[in-house]
Length: 268
Image 1 (cartoon, rainbow, N blue to C red):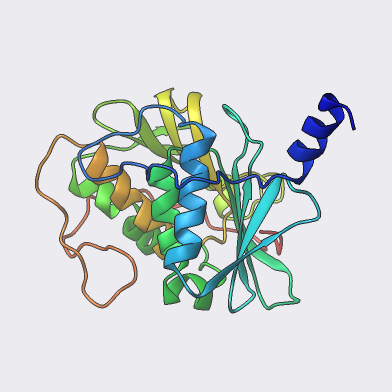
Image 2 (image 1 turned 180 degrees about the horizontal axis):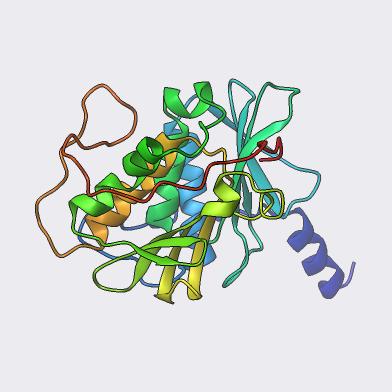
């Protein structure tokens, strides 16, 4: 073999993950993610999640470009694209009704690693894999999901069929597409919930999108993370003991009641 042929063969057979232990991503309250990190941080996060959570098993797909983590229940999976760059979708999360059943909800993301880390940890709770389909959007559900934000003083704005909760510092936020969330026939295929970072929701530098049947507990874990990392207040919302997600006990400001849904679509 020539040197070029040998180098090409080595590149095809070498593992996608680094052979040396990468530096773990820095996370923690009070530090806002600054843009989308390089692929090495996501590689390290995927590897550490598999190592720290025995209920999840890693396996390769037909392509070396992606790795998949499967929950032992065979109803939750997280796929990581090793080749994703910049604003590409790096992560795809999917939940299924049964090991051979239809998909119930899904998420796609190319976000800062602290948000992904929170999402992965939320997937490893009992709530995530036992409540495989979220309840239809109601005012109590909406209040539960957004309560960590309102507890930190985030205010909502309404623009058409979108409800937005931008961070006080304007660097991130939560957006709800009400039409998609209630299963309107013309919008059920759109993401119902979107976490975003950047100048504003219409011009994000990163997003994480969730289908309408995503369990409220999973979404609340992420809004709690946003509230801690993108708020000026130092007081933390009170956690509800005995739950896999972080909740709050205090009453949140009133939120608008979503339009009454028609016949709900089965698609997630």
